Amino acid sequence: MADYVNIKNYSKDGEIAISRKVFEVLATEATDKVLGASVSKVKSKNKILVWLYHPVKVTFHRNGQVEIKISIALKKEANAKSVSLAIQEEVAHSLLAYTESVPFDVQIRVASVE
Image (cartoon, rainbow, N blue to C red; front, side):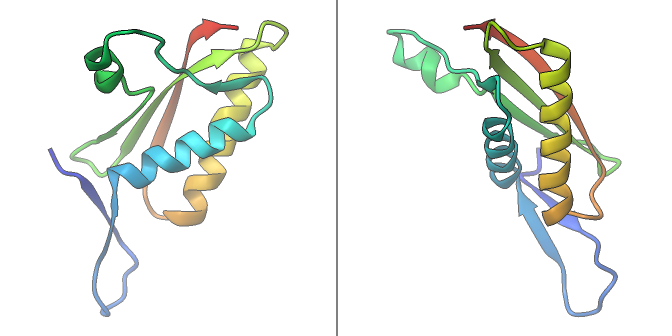
């Protein structure tokens, strides 16, 4: 499994690649900007379970598409549909600023309601 996606900028100066961790950080920060939701966190006494849990999962497909799955904790008074749409838009704007030529798909899953 590749840990980088190559950016096609059509110049002869070289290639640039963006790490999976960069996509995770951008998606997490964009999610935290939206009111009514946050990236979900696991609450457990088992340190192994906490270490294995990743609320933002990034998958690089062979066709060049990047798939981002985000598990969120939704506030009780928030509308799930509008918050999910706002998160998708915020993540899309954030990714377009850094990776304008990479196709991506953002999926939101409500993991808990606080």
